[in-house]
Length: 239
Ligand code: ZN
Image 1 (cartoon, rainbow, N blue to C red):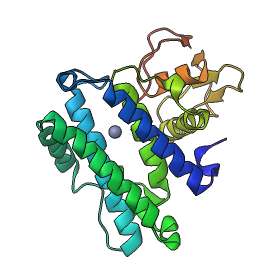
Image 2: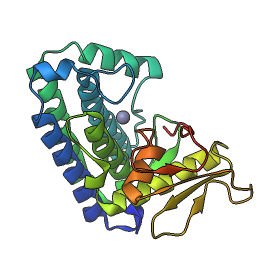
Image 3: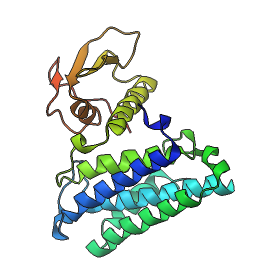
Image 4: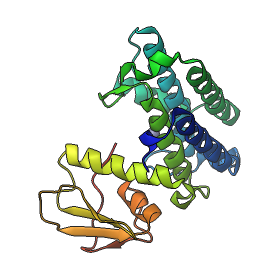
């Protein structure tokens, strides 16, 4: 089962449960812990918290675009996005926690109030892809679940709903395939048919293991619990 086969209500529910999961992982952290490192190179938990808050604000802009037809991109530029995160990371702990919850509430409101016709309106992501507004539910789902793990306070891929793991795998393989990355790589999830990144090239390496482990590896969050046929392989970048 893939995320985009679900009814809209179910998709939004999974995005919201990811937000609750992120909030729960955040609640494990004291204000002082926010100075600590995440799984993302160069980002402290302050940076990550600012990013997850500003990402919700950026998705609000896409939903405004869908509702009004007036183009409002997620970010003015890559530099503006990076600067916003760097500046956000200097906020005090209470302001940072508030930045997260405030923008979560705004995004929820946008989803709740979006006119039915606007869900199919085309908007453009920060990566330059044109997608219907309904895609914001998947974009946010991806962010909150994975970044909850990045907070490094106990979040695990094993806690993700299976449909999120399955859809992440499909998403990642699709991106690699489109960008001509990971040629020859095969992902073999226990109990499932193995999936080659590129059907028409011979397999040169296989990464196998349980679903959560293979997805975790594919997102670049480590190789615990997976077997890599030819040692030392790191996954191609995905986002
Ligand atoms: Zn992110």
